[in-house]
Length: 305
Image 1 (cartoon, helix red, strand yellow):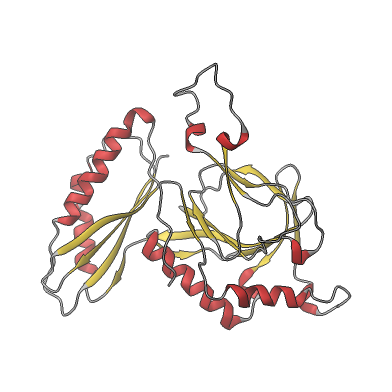
Image 2 (cartoon, rainbow, N blue to C red):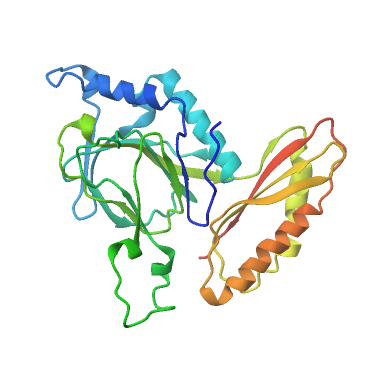
C-alpha cells in the first residue's frame, strides 16, 4: 500500500501513489493511438455538459480498464482510505478526460462522502495545454471577514488553492469546500488532455486488523457518548482515530488519523477540547487478552441538520 502524504484538516496529497499508474495510462494511450480506428472500446465516453457548471468527457473507470490492472489499483485505493481517512470503501469511480474548453465551476459535493479524491493519469510534465488544476477555496476565504483589512488587496492565489494533476498523484480533500477544475485550453487531442480517476471515500466505520472482537470494540464505542458532552456545540465532519491493542488488551499509540470537523470560529476551542478529550478516553481503554496485536481505525461522524 502507498505511503506518505500528511493529512491536514482539508486536503492530503500523495505523489507516486499507485504502482499500476503506467499500466493504466498505457491502456488509455493504446486505445487512442490510431485516430481513424473504429474499435468498439473507443465508443464508451459520455460528453457531460451542464451549462455554466460542468464540461468533460467521462466513463466508468471500473469498466474502462482491464479487470486485473484496475482491481489492483482499486484495492490499494480502498486500503489507503481505510488506514488514512477511516473510510471503509470508495464510490464507483469515474474516469474523466478534459480537453479544450472542459472545466468544472466551483461547487460543493454533498452528501456523496466525507472525502473526495482525484487520482491523476495526466501527462503533466511536458504538457501542451494550460489549466486543468484542481481548485479549492482556501479556508481563510470561507471566513473572509474575520480579519478583513480594507487596505489590503486580494488576488486569485490568495483565494483559491490550485493543485496540479501530476502523473500518479492522489489528491483527497473535504468535498464540502467549494472546488472546481480550471478550464483546459490548448489541445483537442485526448492523449494530451487532463485524465483523472475520481470519486469519494465513503462508509466511515470501524475497521480492525487483528483478532480484536468487534463486539468488544462496539461496547467501547457506545461508552464514548458519555464523554462527548457536545451540548449545543455546532460541529460537523469526520473525526477518525487509530490505535494499537497489544496482546494484554492495552491500547497504545492512539492518534488522530483525519479530522474534517468544523465549527464556527467562536467555538473552535470547544472543538479542540472535544478532540483532546476523546483521544484521552480512547488511550485509556482496555480489552481482553488476545492471541496477537490488533490495529484499529475508529471514525466518528458528526452531523448538523
